[in-house]
Length: 324
Ligand code: NAI
Image (tube, rainbow, N blue to C red):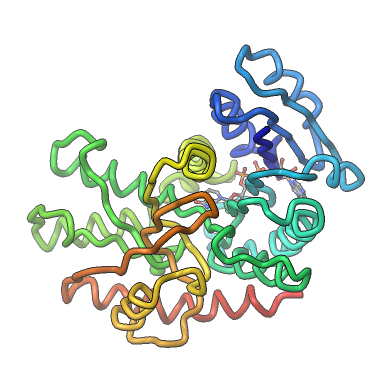
């Protein structure tokens, strides 16, 4: 019995994400939690003739029932950006929401794989980790910041420039999930880029989210592409856990779950030996993080990106880790 819970299931990301998860034969029970509207979303999705049972839970007094014994908890709950806002501006509201959902997971589904979408991911993942530590159920291999949208965007944007099918363009994107902390390693693609192309692509991958925020003009941030990316990530975690399929995805993790070689590569790339969270290529397995790959060779251009990412990430991590 595989139970997947989506917290924030009635939202812009939550609804299409739940739809995509409903399509998976790997899911037996899809549990939808939000503070509003989940009975309707659940009733609607429950008519789709795939294997999973769908249940809707609304409000804090139904959170335990929603989350209890989940194998995966995906969290896209909270507020999205409006034009002019950074992801860090969301901290004030989303930090408390994520902390409370993590507390319920630590109590009622301590073994769940936690996939954190709510921004600022650079800080919300340390918040979840601290809650699990407090409840003595922390396993750093099971808590992930979902950065898959950055990888999806990078693949799409590079394929547009190079005239390729995106399925053949896999860009390693590491670091964190906001502006300068997002580091695409284009030099590892084996493609040649002009300096102009490099600058434009790097900027577009780092700030692609702003294109959507601007185009939606106050109505929120990426939801459909995020649902696509979030479902891909959650289903890969599930594939690895349930079927034993080996899948590698870049994801933001506590470096306590990373190999010494990978940790060393973060130190060398950023020039900072105090970073405790970083997104790296992670091989997923039955217990979540199975192994981590080091960053690998980087260009001088990318060295500068890493230095800038490290400096910003450090503050984001400290802010999340010290949140009570
Ligand atoms: P939305 O406002 O459309 O939906 C959020 C949902 O969360 C709403 O249905 C709301 O009722 C619910 N919610 C609020 N408080 C809650 C609580 N205490 N418990 C459960 N549910 C609660 O927002 P949207 O567009 O779906 O974005 C959600 C989050 O995802 C935002 O923080 C956004 O910044 C983030 N995001 C992350 C991305 C990533 O790449 N990791 C990409 C895009 C957005």
